Image (cartoon, rainbow, N blue to C red; front, top):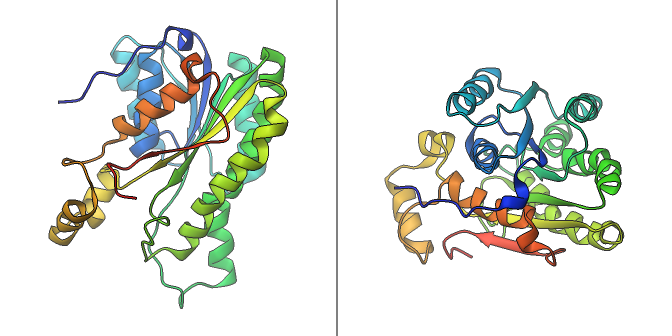
Length: 256
């Protein structure tokens, strides 16, 4: 049974932008903000799950999210999507940089082209999304940015060196921008998740050995779900976290 989310009245009516919001952790975050009464905009490259999510939220009587198909490897398209969403909804009080792809690869297989493509998905979009929303946050008198990190590289997990590089940089982005953004009451934090049981993770990697790995490494029993990550994101987006910035918050059941 899903634990009910805390209610944050200050999020009602706020504009929230989520990258990679069509499925997995991103969809959980979009759903959670919609349940708070926020006006959510999201982008994703996958059209079918994005449209299904939007329809499911609207059918539940919640504010229907705005969404746009966008390949974040194209920074111009990312900036255009944010500009269009802002033109229709108004400036964003919250940005959640969630988009990522943890495709497996070996050190030996990495080419310069593959490396650049991995960074184009897992690292580069966050900075340019921040750059795009900050002017609006300044007009609002403040805002909250939540960057999604990972505990995978912190636990020395193998199988994705490029992903590890990109996700380890998230803390640098958060800490490097906290002081200048803070002068305008814009908070920025990292939420680093453990092994979250999205449909993709379960289908590709949760085999018998994976179950054993969970039992060995997590301090808490059970499985992490997108809902668990969304709960922390909501807190950091809300006024309850008014004096939290430049920090990393781990949601990993004690793995790291």
